[in-house]
Length: 207
Image 1 (cartoon, rainbow, N blue to C red):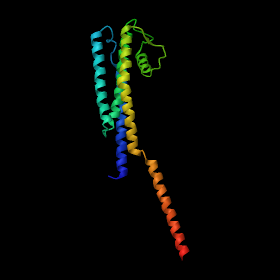
Image 2: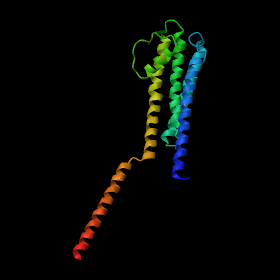
Image 3: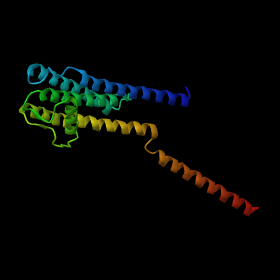
Image 4: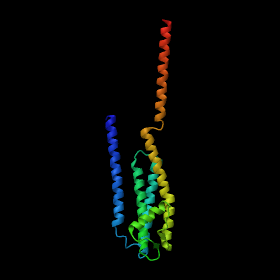
């Protein structure tokens, strides 16, 4: 396989992985808006807390495994995409929990729809805090505290590992010292050219 064919095949693989990532995110968001979440919340605390804890624990376990693969510098770049999908999934899990709690009076102010719940989750992750939506009930505040801890422990670590992976892949394809090598080689060529000029002048002077 020629270099051009190898480059084309690599570009196609990256395009397929990126397309798979986009489709996975779209499917997760669609599930968030379509699944019947109205039955969850304080009305069914046992089922709600069980699903909530199990989902977050599973996501955390897979994130830690993918981070391990990234730290071991495994050549498969899909690990980075898996981490990004898992980060989005964790955000949707918290948004679902907030939406379920919003159906119980006295838990939230300003949160009524799934868009509101997703908005509040993203605002909390970004630590912006506009104040238009606020948890006022004890259960809602417990979930908000869990999200803060979960973000600090897992999502921040995952984002750091993902940025490290991107940097390593970039250096692998372009080389960290690419520009320095070019300049170094140009200097050698310049010195060789000057040496040839001096040699020609000495031969002419001797003749």
